[in-house]
Image (cartoon, rainbow, N blue to C red; front, side, top):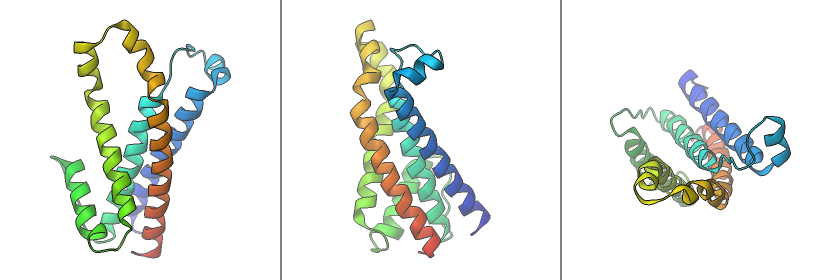
Length: 160
């Protein structure tokens, strides 16, 4: 496997691993207590973010199998468009993978804007409940990222 492809696959696996561990940490009060993390602290927003990046880096890897590179500015948009153009519209990969990727972008964009929105519109009570409120989106993000990344890694290893 090409060195850069392997590096992106490694990064995708790393992002997925940290998403899984942050999800477990958020659900396990005993571990939070052991680590001296306040019981009202959760990491669901980070789970969503790391799940998105697992998908993003796996897509960067599969694009490299076709010698397609994406760069800043707008690297996320460009990566998505190249993935759609070269792997989905051509039928190389199932359209479901594109749908998962698109969903993760929406969640990532939401997370990037959350601080601004909360600062302007919400008080202390909202700040306290937001992390818990993100549990369900974090769970589905992690599930989707696992499905997506495992399929991309299989495609890379199979040479697609």
